[in-house]
Amino acid sequence: MNIYSKSVPVWPWLVFLGGAMTCLIFSTVSHLFACHSRRFYFFFWRLDYVGISLMIVCSFFAPIYYAFSDQPHWRFLYLSSITLVGILVIVTLLAPSLSSGRFRSFRAALFLCMGFSGVIPATHAVVLHYDHPLILGSLCYEIVMGLLYAVGAVFYVTRIPERWRPGAFDIVGHSHQIFHVLVVAAALAHSAATLIIMEWRRGFTAPA
Image (tube, rainbow, N blue to C red; front, side, top):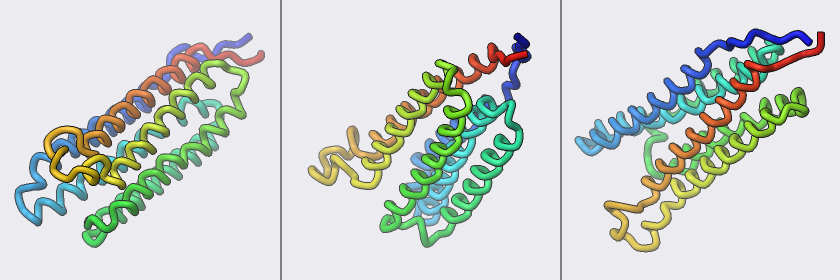
């Protein structure tokens, strides 16, 4: 048996961490300053959407890079595709006309479509490495991540529970807070999945 290099590049992992931190920083700044004025409101919420898009795109880099380390053509295809889609989504969301509340569902749909496009490379990776338990374990965490994002999007769009009792959840418990908690939980699930793939890649073996 020949063993691949035990060291793996860490930059894809850092790309994910950078995207996640940028998203949370943009979100924090937006929540702090969007109430300043109408002009600030539209600027900072568009900044918030950019942060979410960056986080989704950056989330693809580590798992795709490590899962397809021995498939450079597929790796390039998947990473370039999600980067292009992310750029198009960001350009779309920066349009002032799409910042209004009536496009709330449309924005959520864009994020979900971009996120769930990861089903394609994930399925491909499982087909290539179905006999490696760590890949399947990582996939379980990715499924949890997808479910958390989907549930968060449902709260974001439906505005539950404040739509049932207006004013009762203005400080604690409204849908946007729930959405943020689920996004952070999803990011943690994705972190676990990525660390598993990195560990698998460090000890990956192939026939001589």
